[in-house]
Image (cartoon, rainbow over all chains, first blue to last red; front, top):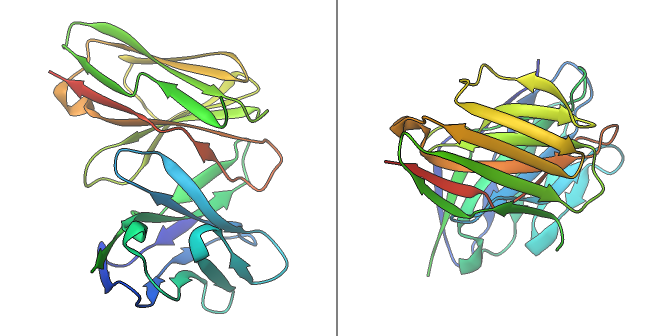
Length: 115
Length: 113
């Protein structure tokens, strides 16, 4: 079975600082991995995904993530935080093994950006 | 309309009321999902539909009754809810056979009084 671990519940950075949000996964098959962002009172928006190929994937809003199989990690980074990046971020792994295509989500992490 | 839409965006209902949430996807997908998101709790998958057939029910109480008349529309019928059912209800869709990414609607914020 798949699982996702996002350690901590809150990260605070200064505007312009590096953003690093950690995600570790467990999967019995080669994983498909995703990062989603959720702004207050909105749905989840897909930031980026890894399926196959290049292990460094770029997403929207200047975010990128690197798939590291040896570390079972898929950390999300952004070189310079902006106030508009304040939101909740979810890492997810796809489970395609059964009849249903499902996502297993981490518990999410809240990013705050200080002026 | 583009993407996944949900109506209403906000709903306040008493415990004896009956109401319905509506979701529509404009992405040509063939799988649809209902999730419940409560404060301080992980996202909970409630129901899955593939090609308008229910393929998963995660032990959801019968006071929640889903309906999927076609691959583009999904409803969640609500009756005799409890205050602990207050939450953000999210609808999502995906393409069966794809990589599994789901596209979400904006959610319905439900308050049960």
